[in-house]
Each structure stands twice: as structure tokens, then as C-alpha cells.
Image (cartoon, rainbow over all chains, first blue to last red; front, side, top):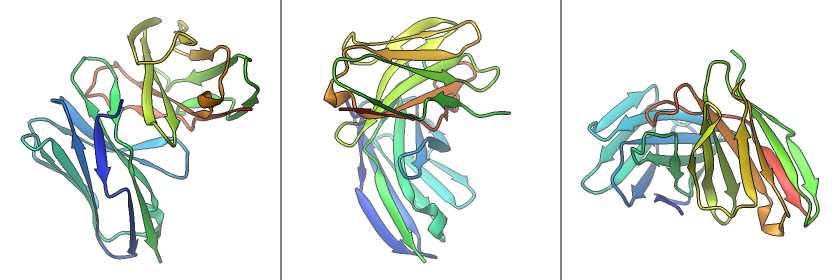
Length: 112
Length: 114
């Protein structure tokens, strides 16, 4: 079963604009991770934020986590056409094992 | 370091057949997880192996099984294939299998059941 939902399901922007994707989840978590997937291929790990962290940056990526609202957001600044992909949030419930529960993803299209 | 490799990349089978998919993790990684991705259900966890032991299993029927070898390579098997088993099967490896470890995903095996 899906842990969370991403919002929006699809997002279309122009190069240079910022893209914001949101993720909500249902149960308490140990950490939340964001992944990118290009065109039905493998997933690429973008960033991990732990439950005791509120914000994290990595290059053009900024992730926030609000555990009281059980939500996270991923901001991609100055988007490029190469950022076109599907983005998934995944939660680790802290079972101690490598078991991630994924949302359904946001499809991002960045037009030149 | 070589990444996670999965073979075959594409597979076409008919209903009732069985299939075996293979995953070679990154060298030194001892945990391998398997996920099924479909348009309807999204990404769903199948099972996780660590040092040849299945530690966790998702909500899938017994037709789905797996194993891990002493060199950490893993295989998953689906018996009596159904049309609904058509999916992208992804494996991921991590160093220790602890939740905070980054998981590295392979390119996937796309299975089509006719």
C-alpha cells in the first residue's frame, strides 16, 4: 500500500523556473527520501532528510519536512530541461530494514 | 565501482509460465531489496535480503519468491504468471540494510506477461 501521496501529479514549467513538489504520508517515519526516475528506468537517490531535521539542501534541491503535518516538499530551483523526470518521495518507518514506502510520484516536465 | 545490474532488461512471457530475474548489487553491499512498479499501484516493496536471509516481505502472494547467494547476488522468481504481473521490477542495494543507508537502484527488468 502507498504511504503517501505526491502533489501535484504532474507539473509543467519553463526552464529557469522553480518547481515545487509536495508529499504527504500517513504514519510516523524515521526518515524521508526523494528519488528521481527518468522515463521508466531506475531510481536515482536525491536527498534524505531525517525525522529530526526540518530542512536540507543539496545543490539546487531544497527539502523541507514537517512531521506534525506529516508532509515534505521538494524544491528544485532554476530548473533545466534535464530535470524532466518523475519524482518520488519514500518513507522509512524505522523498522531497521531497507524497506521504503513510495508515493505515486510527480511527473515534472521542464520545457526549454 | 560498478552500479547495480539487473538481468535481463526486458522479458516477455505468457500466462502460467514462471520467470527468474537476477540482481547483482554494488560490490560490498549486503542488502538487496526488490520492488514492483506498475502504473496502477506505483512502487511496492516485495522483499529484502541481507546476508542470504529474507528479513522483510511485502504484501505479495506466495508466487513471488526470492533468494540471495553468498556473494550477495539475488534472484526473484514469479511462478504461474498472471497478466497483472506485468511491471518494472527494480532491485536496490545498500551497504548494511539499515533504513538510513542510501539505496542504489538498478535499471530494472521490464516484464510483460501476454
